[in-house]
Image 1 (cartoon, rainbow, N blue to C red):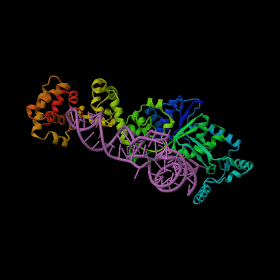
Image 2: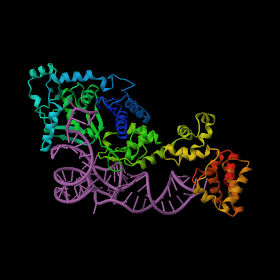
Image 3: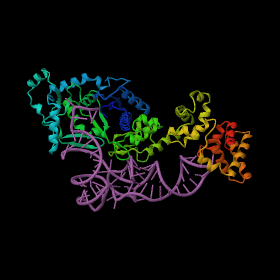
Image 4: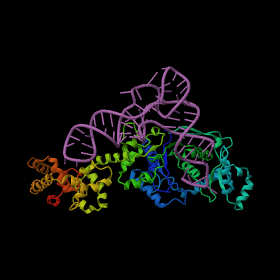
Length: 484
RNA sequence: GGCGCGUUCGUCUAGCGGUUAGGACACCGCCCUCUCAAGGCGGAGAUCACGGGUUCGAAUCCCGUACGCGCUACCA
């Protein structure tokens, strides 16, 4: 590649980072990493009313949580600082001067009411509905006088009369053509002097030397307008890659009704950043059509824009759950123990001090839960019995495994055998319990299930012998006697 | 209304003129097994939105139609 790649993710801080934005960020990041380019984070906060510092902070937090780092942007700085549009007004002012000077921008004095009325009228007919260019005919001296007199005005782009159809070089959709007739003289600078999105984003992309614009599909129709601005500024047009949307199961916009939408909400629901990263990356991109587990490192190495799919995707929470489980199982016991700790603490099962005092015990918890947890939120409930002094028996479980006479005899025998057991470990416990069955005339399973319910409270639990071994012997036997 | 984009198993996708249309999740069955899982094996599931072309041959190329979505703002 002749010039080095520079891409940017430019969220507007009008809300949290949601899953679609996360994917856009991931693709920009991965593309930059894969081709040795530069990834820039820019905050597009031209909408002063809806942008907040808290949203900005949350977006940065979410990106970091996902493992996305940026080469230029907030907190890290860079040669084109500031990376907030509200701090770049001088740049927009200069760009407007350039356009005034070369005749590609002109003042418009039409009121909003007039414009709305015209638009309504135009839309009832057929044909384009763009601005009718009323003010384009005003002589420059007259316009200057009106501005001097303090008349409110906006600045509009003057679409060149001789500009033919506009071709958008889109890597995802191939070349798409927008008829010149559909281009209207849109607003560049508002009455209050602030730039509109279509102006500010182009000025910044030009200033920052952006070579590839990778963003949501909703901007595709804005692209020809932006190309006109690049041209008016005398700047080369970047290449584009427009990503299709991510929808909820009903084909509608992903909303809270479907479950989590913001990255932080997914985190709170027990999803791992590597799982979210992997799942979202594969919603619209594929390595080879076969591989489903793709690490950050792999994506940063293998990502390519030409394998982005064109069609919109429906977010499948079940597949995400599966993938999250894959990542949970992949962790080493020590790693899982460390990462499940906050969840154990939050649910009041333990404290950081207890973990520090006996890390090995916590490490040995990991294998018990790893292959039966889909989300981090599944862990605390499943392990709670290991932390309590006594457990409440689930009635349905007790009915199944403790109600019969043979079950009660089995439990009594088990309590007796385990109470005097000398080797309180997995093998010792298993042997002791298995040996009871023949004498009682029942299957080993009857013994196991009775003990399981008495000790864990439920007929469904982590593996019995490991669980017992992790409990204090007298505590375990006490629970069995209590259940009789 | 105008302009643009999209359409392969329920879902995510592979496919880029000749394949029994492949994989993954979910689903079903069997195996393993101290419960639940995890894992292994197997199964069912796609007339490639529809209709016309082009071609010896089309999911793949072209043109329509339908449906969905986006833009059409002094939102981004």
